[in-house]
Length: 395
Image (cartoon, rainbow, N blue to C red; front, top):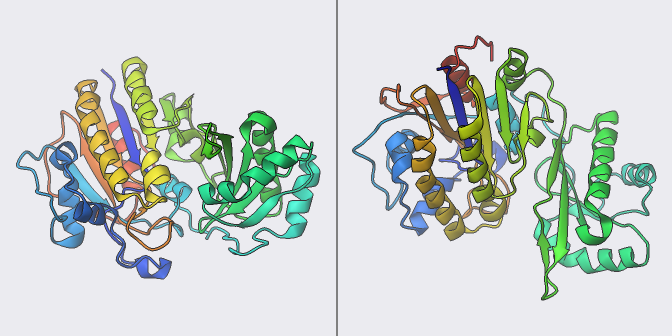
């Protein structure tokens, strides 16, 4: 039977500050360690594959309240990022052999974050009246602040989407889904992506952020999010694999992150449980010679950015419990890789990503348990995947 690789990206699951963390303002960040300090965290399945071995390599001690396994069955790495960023595209692209060596463009936090001539041209191209906000903000906070005004303007026939940024290299647009329409929002975001690229504004992602109104009048972001990434500068491992006839399956944010390149099957799934169910389905149905890659977004979106320690801890334990089913669906020739794209320490200052080592946990029925090692690039993920598939690559 031909071999397959299953990659689970736990979005933002860092294991301690990288050596260059201070230059990012992240000295002392430690997503796993700080969660464990405040919560009796039990992750036996990931520990069996080598999670705590990788953590101890970085810190010389285990996380508080956690004990290592006596049943090590995998091999693990503590991987350091080489890209000039700490965001989702940087981490994912580097995994697949395309490190981001040109720094992203970050916008100023105060109004106007994006130049007024840019937002004016964007509004003209999109045929809308203008924008609200144009400043840095938390996504939930800015909708609470301006959602009512945005909806009242829509009822008057005036289209003023909420445009904002953050400490990441992003342009985000939020609209009331019921009145503005999802497809209209997506068209607006595509127009924004095109204009950014025309102006050589190296913004990593344009993100569509639809929301709706709850019965109590509060606002809720829906599952219609879409990311529009800047095009990759060269072919990733995913592109190389698809050209060679391998099947590549992207679940959740994966197709958006890779700008819809190198993905032969795209599977939409908004939250961790949906992503897990989609992963199990694809493992049952995907043919030989496949790479299946899923991004478990809730760790970052719902818990890291919102500084929710207990929510992050419970989500980690839930994922750990799912590993038994994932492993039960693996064939003798399958390889499982569990990793992350950056950190987002929920106990840290601010609400943004943190520059950290990430774990790379590898298990399959042919794997011999090994001591943890340092890896000097996230590309260790792609290299391990390619080696398992007997695919020659220069990443």
